[in-house]
Image (cartoon, rainbow, N blue to C red; front, top):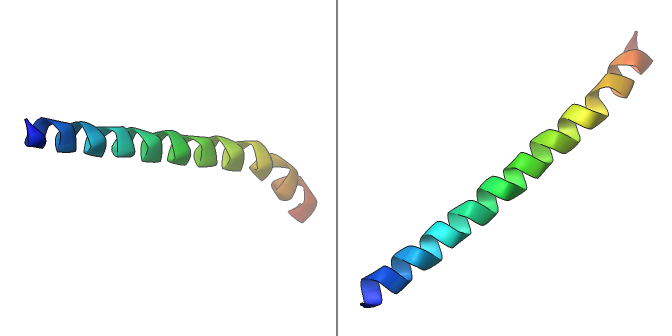
Length: 40
């Protein structure tokens, strides 16, 4: 019983981290082109 609660908490935390890193990647992808244009 205790283990399943712990496992659920871990998987929820992993999902949060994945969502967060996905957001960071999206943000980086959006902000890269203007930076490249400035360099060139």
